Length: 187
Image (cartoon, rainbow, N blue to C red; front, side):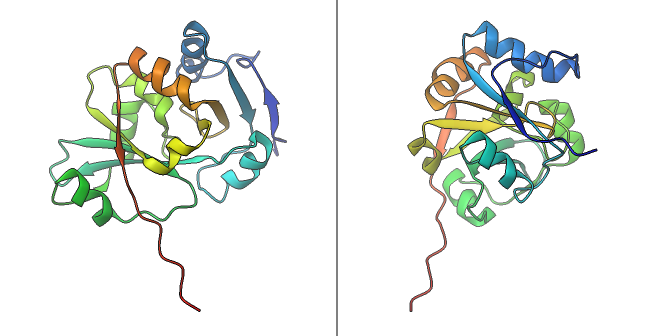
C-alpha cells in the first residue's frame, strides 16, 4: 500500500513500535521541536529523494561501520549525495580498515532495522559502544534528519538542538570528520 508523504509536528496518534515511539517521547521530553514525515519504506538514498522534497531538507546518509575485529563501532552521518570511501575515513581515524557492520550489530547496538540507522538511535546505545562521526559538510546546514528506528518515517530537527540537547542527553558527542567530494572532471 502506497503511503503519501505528509508532514506532522508531533508523534503519530496511532501506536507504533515502542522504539519508534521512544524517539518521539525523548524529543518531546527535551523540548526539541521536530517535523515528521511518514512514507513508504525508504531504505536507500534513492528512496529518500521524495522524502527530501516533502521535508524540505536533504536526508542524511547514516552508515554503521566497524573495524576488522568488530570491537569498535562508528555511526557516520554524511550528506546523502556524497560518495563514501572507507579509505578517506580510516586515515582520519587512524585505524587500519573499516567495513559495514552487520544487521545484527545494528539491531543490538542501535535498536534499528537495516536501512534505518540514524543519529536518533544513539539513545539506544546506553553503553556508549558507538562513536558518532559527522561529516563537516552537515554542519553548514540548519537541520539534521533521520529515521526513528524504522525507515517508514523521517524526522527533521534543528542541527543546534541535535548537537546541544539531544546528543548530551543520550551521552554522546560528535567527532567531526572531513570527507572529500570527488573532483569534477575537467572540461
